[in-house]
Every structure is written in structure tokens, then in C-alpha cells.
Length: 143
Length: 143
Length: 143
Length: 143
Image 1 (tube, chains in turn cyan, brown, green, yellow):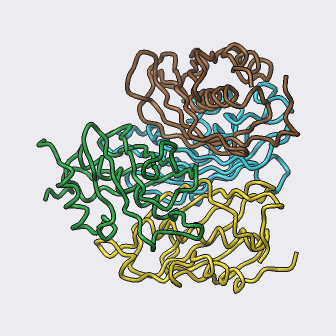
Image 2 (cartoon, rainbow over the protein chains, first blue to last red):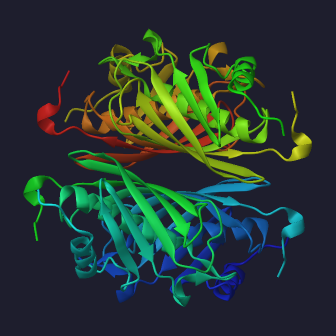
Image 3 (cartoon, rainbow over the protein chains, first blue to last red):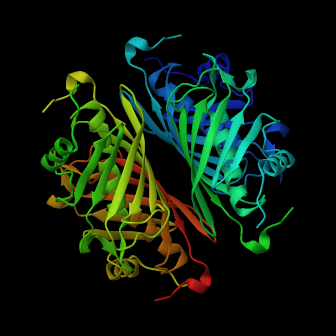
């Protein structure tokens, strides 16, 4: 398989409306990993000027999906089956970035973990594990 | 403690911008349970006209928060510490409702489960368990 | 498919050494549900005469597996892929029973929830959700 | 606080019967991390000569508990409130070791992740996140 680029994944996310109206950027991709950034706007905040939980979950999901696409190719049919998030610290009113790492890519399931950080911080704001179901080859549609 | 009503919780959610721009309605409350509805609009959909994962997670979180407020009073400082979601079926392009039930309300932690349904369907589209950290009494602010 | 009985599942668990040396009994089966009991002995206790966490996790896993076998037939190759447990209350030094309910049985994945109780108690000691991967039909081995 | 050693944690685990009859060894401790090993015996195996799920869960729990004790001191009252495990690969009939890392140590909750490996392997057999509730200082009993 040809190497997938961050640009290609970004384009697929955009086409499938998974880039949250352009707020999510895939910054890097490769080695079963991906790094994504969420450009936080007013609508993603909660009282206390913290980033909302659904925003963190959405970023984690997209970052892991990007890592998976980088590994198995541009298969838009993979679906999240499980997501477990631990909220660790109140995020600042800043962009959030996600470091996603695949722990397993099987024929039918992929499992990974994502650590989320407020921009410029070293202590994580949240940690996520998630599982994707990968469709059988015959159902896949290459772009 | 005086009985909390669905109306009071709805108002608190609105004040704290937790009602997703008016899309979430608390339909009923009581007996350690809550029922909430998400009025799905175009922006909550994904390709294939299905409701997005973050929308489901957000609804589950709010429904459980409502059930908790109904039990411990209008304590806006309770925070979600863990959320685990299993996506079970592709939701239809319909409103989604959530049945939240508290499994435990301790002094420091509350744990509950939420089952999510597409409007009019009997098989769930997702199942969630989540944990809330309850602030010590001295930090609470009654409204 | 012929109806599977609790007795048949019990026998399979015994053959596959999944009945924890005879400590787990499948009390009932059917309707995508199962009820299982763990006969707690000294070795399953922890200081404070409480039942150990691994014992609770093991019981939940077996109860859900039983519910699944009751639904898809005696397929010993189904494997647990995810288990999430919330510990709710300290179990008494008593037998523990599990009420398992399947939330979804797909072609490839089954998801369920299990509520665990100390014998004779009405408030749960733990709540579990778990996912099983179901092998493709050609890999199944009927007994 | 004086630095806690792996030896001290090992002794506490033994006293509290948390070392699984001597099968769990804390190999190293420090820097919010711990490494633990489970000496697998016949009773921990399942058909196909694989290590049982409850054994993996038990090892993860003890490894994280060790990492926590290394950080907050020898506080035997900390209790697991949530454990989420993803089973990734079938473990070989070998000892299993666990790398535990704390993601957060708060006043009331600690959260960490554990990666489990079959001895000598580089791909993980399971990944765990878990949460501990830390008792208020007045309830702590130093040894």
C-alpha cells in the first residue's frame, strides 16, 4: 500500500464532514500514530472558559481515525464501536491537541489510545481508548 | 431536600450552556433517573444521514447530569470524570432520547448508565456508563 | 437453532475450564439474558472480608459469555475484546450473583451489560459492560 | 514524603494478600510508574494455553496500585473504582509483565494506564486504564 499522507486524510475528513467545520487539523501521520489539533472557538467552550467534554471526545475520535486511515488506507467505512474517556484536568481556553497511537490493527478490530493536551501544556487534560470495527475487504470503497 | 423538577434542571442547563443551544430537553426526572431528548438538526448529522458520535456522547452526559442534579440538588460543580460509550446501531436521522439511571450516588462519586434510542425505536443505538465527581459540601453553591 | 439450556452452557464452561473450578453456576438463561452465581470461598476474599475485584470481573465475564452462548449457540471461540467495570459498593462476604443482558448481537460483535449483587442485596456492588468478538461461521466449531 | 521502595510495596501487597499468593512481583517503582510481573502457573491458564483474562486484569490492577503507593505513600485504603481493559492479542503461555503509568494523581482520584506484555514480546497483549479513589487524609493509616 502506498503511504497515506496527513493531507489525504485531512481531505477525506473534510469530504465526510468529520473535520468539525474545519476546526480539526491533522498535523502529522505515520508509524501507527497521528497528531491532530482542535482550533477552539467560543462555541466549544463551557462556563469557566473550559473546553467542552464533547469537543475533547470528538477530537480524540478523529485523531484515532486519522491514525487508522494512515495504517489501513482511506477506508471511510471504519466505525467507532467503543470509546472510553477519562477527564484528567480542566482544559484551558486554548487549542487542544491529540496524540493518537494504535495499539492493535487486526483484520476486524483496531484499538488505540489518545492523550489530549491543552496547547503548550505537558500534563494531559484527558486520556481516551477507542475501538474501531474495520469492514471486510469486499465492503471497502477506495477513493 | 426539596424535590428538584425537570424544569429547574432545564433552567440550570440553559444557564450553564449545557443544553446544546436548546437542542436538549429534560423530559422527565425522578427516582434516580432522567429522560432527555436531543432535537437533531442538520449540523448533528454525518454522511449517511446518521447522528454523530459526539452528539450521542453529549446527550448521554447531559441526561446523566440531570439525573444526578435531581438526586443531589442543583450543584453545578459536579464534573464528569469518566465516560464509556458502546455504539450499538447506526442511529436514524431522527431525534435521539436517553434514559439515564444512577447506579450509585456516594459522597464523592456518582455512577450511572444511560441507554440511547432513536425516536420510536426499541433497540438502543448506544449504551453509556459515566462517573461524576461530586464536590465537597463547602464548595457547593446553591442557586 | 435449537434452544440452548443453562445446563449445556454449564457443561461447556466446565469443559473449557471457565467455571472457576466449579465456583460459577449458570442459574438461568434465555431472552438474551443469563443469571450466574459465584460461590465465594476464602481464596476469593480480600482483607476486610470483601470479595476481590478479579472475582467480580471473572463472574461478569462468564455471565455475559453464557448469555451470548444462549443466543448464538455453543461457540467456544467467542473472545472478550473489552471489559469495563465500575466498582460501586464493597461486596459483603457472601456469594455474588450476576444479571447479564445482551444489548446487541451482531455478526461480528456482541455487547452486553452485567449488574453484580451480593446475595440477598438489592443495591449493586458493580456494573460491567463488555464486548465479545464472534468468529466468522467457517471458524466455528459446534460441539 | 520519604521515597517508597518496590520492596516496601511488595511487603504491603503481601500483608494485604494482594500479591496473588506470591505470583506478583513489583520489579521497579518510581517516577509515577511501576513495573510488575505475574509468574504464570497452570491455574492461570485457559484452553489453548493462554493466560486467563482475570489474571491479566488482576496484574494490571496491582501494578497500578503499586505505582500509586509509590506516589502517595503506603495508603492501603485506596480502592479501584473503574477498570477498563482492551484485550489485544492472545497471551502466550509465559509470564506476563505490566508497565503502569499514572496520568493524574489528584486529592481524591488517581488515573493511570497499564500496558501488558507476554514476557519477551514487544506487542502488548492488553491495555488497561483504571481509576482509584484516594481516601481523605484523616482516614489514612500509615503503616
